[in-house]
Image 1 (tube, helix red, strand yellow):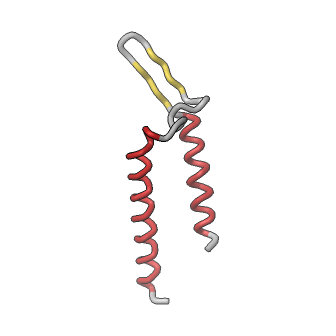
Image 2 (tube, rainbow, N blue to C red; image 1 turned 180 degrees about the horizontal axis):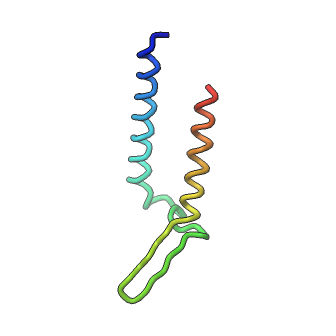
Image 3 (cartoon, one colour; image 1 turned 90 degrees about the vertical axis):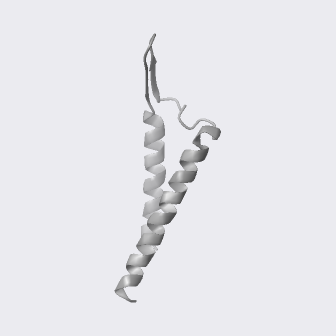
Length: 74
């Protein structure tokens, strides 16, 4: 294979990941339970709300790790 074909495949993969991330951000509010999992931290006070999606972050990290691991095996 030519050296530039590896770079081309890498750029296509990065582009697809950006598109998937954009779709996820666009439709995340419509997917039930994303951002409202048990383990997500929400602190609400009178004029203050602190939200830290801990469980959601861990779940997304595991899913992305699994996806990238599968893609690296090819």
